[in-house]
Length: 126
Image (cartoon, rainbow, N blue to C red; front, top):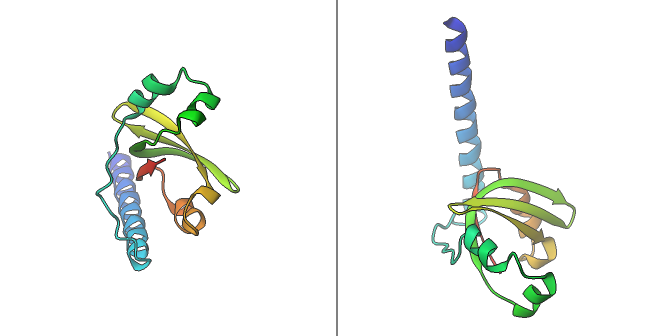
């Protein structure tokens, strides 16, 4: 029983440290003038995007030049220099996003994107 209590105490300490780190990151965002907005609106879910576009070829999608907005929890992130891949999970499933440094406003890729944590909720538009 004492092992379970020790394990539970360790989990509480880990959770407290995680909450502290997230609050510090939020404070840093606010100091940079980023107000931590919550007014982002998605227009499609991942399952809707898959149903609508999975059968289309890349060239066809580029010609359509469709703008969409999605939002979800960041489940994976692979940073590869000037570009990255992010997997978002929303109510409909998962979708992978390609994030190119040069497609973002100056400084966002290095100063913000690389500091986001797995589990953070993100919105993306194109």
